[in-house]
Image (tube, rainbow, N blue to C red; front, top):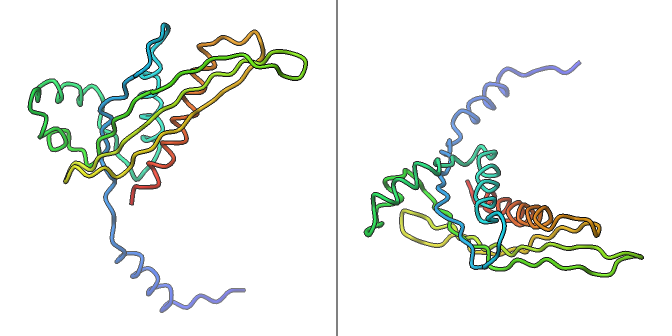
Length: 173
């Protein structure tokens, strides 16, 4: 039987209560554009939606609603210097899809199809304009010869977002 010392329990409770509480970081996803000319559903929109989903799932972050941010951006043109203050964001995320590749490669007896998407993201601290994160990642997905190109590119986009979102989450206190 474990004997509990009330003095140790009280000291532990007091130390937990006195630990500084860190407020979640407020994040606004301003824009993920595409520097690639291609037909089909916009991968940039998928990247924004998936990034938002990933960041919302982290309790150390609060994501500012995109529709609200779009209205704020529109109201602030041409002077967007107050963007972060008006949105209530501590960080603003910008980025771009810079490369999209869909190709077939010989596999073990059959052609396998590969989709790759290069995504670059930047996180800017609103308080001072400092870039606190800037990185790119190439997501990829592969499938059999009957794979639908858009499906592979969507999966590759999600893979790139997952990797970068994981790194952004690590920045939050």
